[in-house]
Length: 449
Image 1 (cartoon, helix red, strand yellow):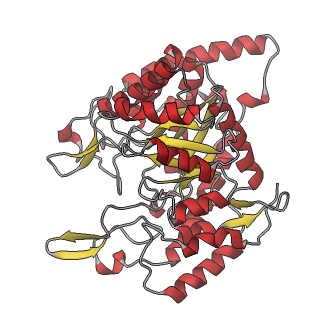
Image 2 (image 1 turned 135 degrees about the vertical axis):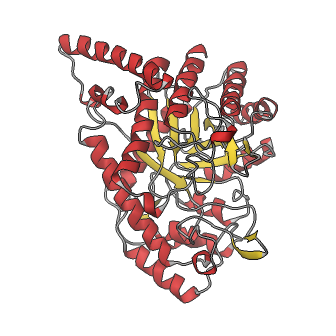
């Protein structure tokens, strides 16, 4: 289970290739010092845990389980407090309970958490009132404030990312093994908003059903340990390759390389070039790997990615995260799924219904319609049902807080409400009520498969 502290040359082969979306660090010597220090830090996760997640994702690939992956669009250093972390975890646990009980399916729970501090951007600079500065690339690179000082990429922030991720993982492990995630807590997870929220009331009814089932099992003398803790894994986009390779270690059990910054990492739509550094890096590590596939992805692209990242065709190794947009999913997805399935590869297919459905409101806020998010998930399920393949899961940007960033949902948020609690540093997230609404609707779709 242990991973030794030696980095390995195999984790640096990407350096000779073009690397998209990397910061323009102004001080290369400072960067080298930070990388050397990161290479001496202990792992954030263990190789054996990564193997465990790969096995769980293997069950998803075989159609035996469902993947729930969710969390912040971009984490922030000033949001590494117990309340924020607990609220995110609580929302994912509630969604997991809904999907497990209402969908009658084991749910693999993976957070976009403890490392999601970096963001790809469409432009390298941003201009406001005639002033042009480097774009904000996430707290791991520079500051959100629109000032020359804040926007200079600072490699010291990579160390802050490590420490913030360590603090987050420490608390998540405590919550998930220390009694908070006990299934008998399903009511406690909901006390703060059940009365005022339609989705909260619906969840409370489900919690009562779970209680009755647990009481019945208890009366029969059955009290499994699995009900008292929960398996919860971490993931983020492997974007800043200096950070990811500094946290790549050789596993002392097997001699294989693992990126010990997270259990699972994914490669984004903007960085999945087959001849690029990100795919080369991902091909060298043993973690479960995700790849985002947008509407321009061809079957040939998908098959080439499989050859590079999953040459042994191992269920659970590779997850394709589709981000097509509600208006394109039904047209673009079928051919991809057909050709990949015909090739014999056993990938996990999951739906990211967020990134293809963003628009700018008249107020200037970037937002998403809940109905579009839901429609993309519906299209995803329809395609898989028509092909007889397994809709493996969902990948959502969400928060445990009552923000007003996406319009619609059961507690309807209107465009005019966006300004009230628009707190994201980058993309709009579903709030807790919208996330629960989505979980119930996805559970219904899964049952209908």
